[in-house]
Image (cartoon, rainbow, N blue to C red; front, side, top):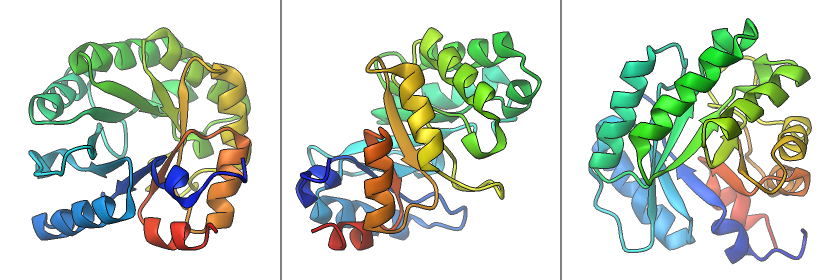
Length: 218
């Protein structure tokens, strides 16, 4: 894994700006930075759509963010709106309360509804791993796979319980195998932290401080 180049790592990055006070000018700067750094995508809030992005830069948009405590029809409508307005990928938050209650039918049906709304767009499922126990992390990943998602993702980066951990990433990768991608997101601010997540099995990174991570890579 350590043989990955700076360019390789950049192509694993969703360059992210989800602060609620972010302006359109901030997002324009994000896009320019992502293009300059060679990031895979930008990840933004749905109110910022549509975006004017250079060819080759993907657009990821959050859904039901950050609480996940949004009715399923509203999540599905949000995802449909995002895709209609240029989103290539949707990062949805699961119904975390249902996961804590081990109500996996509700979790799975919520994800499946959003996946249907996404159509051909890629769906990443944020499980907020820091608030779940290991068994719940496994079940949440299984629910995402059963519902047709393409990725599972550790965290919103907004929960006080914390963001990504190598332990969670490893457990998620062990659960989904090669069938799904695993995105580590939340609190990854150094090249060392990024390397730890990749070594644990992450195939995508959600970063707000992308340049600092890449500058420390070589």
